[in-house]
Amino acid sequence: QSHPISAPKLSRHAAIQRLLSTLAVLEQRDGQLNMSSLASISAAQKLGGSIHGFVAGASIKQVAEQAAKVEGLEKVIYVDNAAYDKGLPENYAQLLVENIKKGGYTHVLAGHSAFGKNLMPRAAALMDVSQISDITGIESEDTFVRPIYAGNAILTVQSEDSPKMITVRGTAFAAGAAEGGSAGVEEGVDPKAECSTEWVSENLAKSDRPDLATAEKVVSGGRGLKSKEEFDRLIPPLADALGAAIGASRAAVDSGFADNSLQVGQTGKNVAPQLYLCAGISGAIQHLAGMKDSKVIAAINKDADAPIFQVADVGLVGDLFEKVPEMTEKVKGA
Ligand code: FAD
Image 1 (cartoon, rainbow, N blue to C red):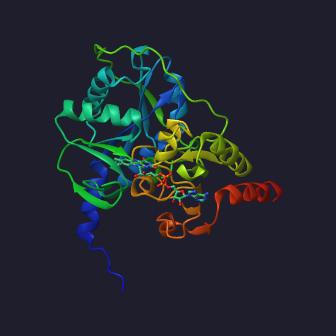
Image 2 (tube, rainbow, N blue to C red):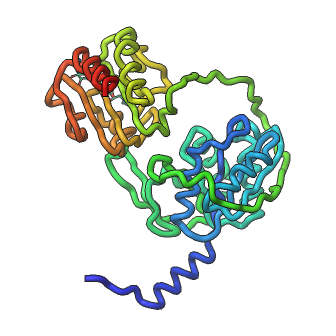
Image 3 (cartoon, rainbow, N blue to C red):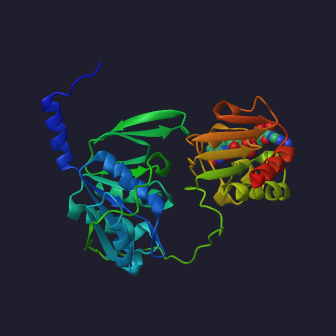
């Protein structure tokens, strides 16, 4: 039976929508907009009201113009200053706060990435409000859903703070279309804040494979691989045959089989690909916390009672040293 929404309720909703205005903090690296931060725009669209994007860094106007094409944005605010290029939170937080105050936003959203997690608590503290972390759902303009205890419980948080400073779990909100929008581009305020920290250098793992956090398919290996040599012999060929990114359990990372940047789970990356195929991973809750939202989970494990089979859509009980090469050959031949 359907319950018609009463007229006063509808108009209250419409009135709230008109008052909402969100600032979506966009990430950039070397003049390229980070597409995974677009999930903040999708989340802002769920809230309703007007949405502005915010970006800062060196020669940033072209990034702002790129962002202006993203669907859903009304305006992109940019601050062109090399001092903000590396996203150091010490000065970026003050920069963000000045721009929040100027725009009078009701909500500020950023991705729950290293950048967002570093920046938003500081900016929230400067605004004297509580931060709401890692949301996976929006119930209304003041009520949000977020996982706690590595995803074992779901918390619904209501906040009276203004503005509401929120980080968004990228895998929970599909990134909006990068083309099709026609937002205005406008210069923001630059407080030219002092920065006590100096950015020296970074050492990034380079890979031609898809990015783990945003890949459509992920092949992950665990301690069951036994050694780095076996991990390298078995996992990359299957990943390449499928066009997948490589992931790993923490036990595999701690044992030196795989790079730290490949760790999936509570203390690693959150992934939600179309296919998550794992071999030699038991399925500890801390691992599940990072991958259980994957659309199809396939697992290979020699132990039929391994907890991974409780979340797997497809399970293969067997020796991975036989099954993984066999599967790689079959995928290559397909
Ligand atoms: P194991 O649990 O040792 O499982 C190995 C599996 O391989 C077994 O199920 C075994 O049956 C199978 N196997 C062995 N040989 C074969 C074979 N020949 N063929 C097929 N199968 C085989 N873990 C994460 O992954 N990510 C995290 O982010 C993370 N964060 C953590 C945070 C905290 C605070 C803590 C306390 C723990 C965290 N952990 C995390 C660790 C987690 O608890 C587990 O220890 C870890 O996930 C286990 O990794 P694994 O499944 O590879 O190894």
